Length: 125
Length: 112
Image (cartoon, rainbow over all chains, first blue to last red):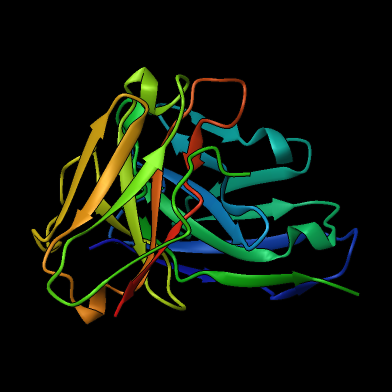
């Protein structure tokens, strides 16, 4: 059974960097089939996919257009986890952030089958 | 912003059948891409309920079923139970210049 455990601060000041980590058990961040995603949820924007990292003989990243200039998702193979960094945050980045696994397969048919517990991140001074 | 449209709310009495629609466009559902459904209980993360339009993960009751036609998909809950009161979201792939993974606006199911 795959489990995802999130950690990170719940309060970030405007213009600073939001950093969250997702620890994986029951699977590997270096899996050749799964991918590791970050998704956020807010009342104004609903559920919004932010990006993912995955390994297919080498590491790849895909990022959402809306955050592409500010986001970095990195794997940490030594700890079997992956992280989210979102730079230059504003109050509009206030949301519940989730990490999630997709099991791989064709890009057009990917569900998110395991989710972390969620972290409410508030951007405020 | 969500590109898949759902009704804000639906309700039904225990034992009844309710359906939730998810309307997309020619760049997502209408292009033939799969639709997935999630159930979100209050204060918890979304849980995968239906994948690949009509498939249930292990452990999901067969009261939940999914279908797709044209640019829309539907989730049906038969024999509605109090524990089904939750938010439900559809999700698909989008081939336009926007982001590849898109979600619905969400539907609150209330058990009367």
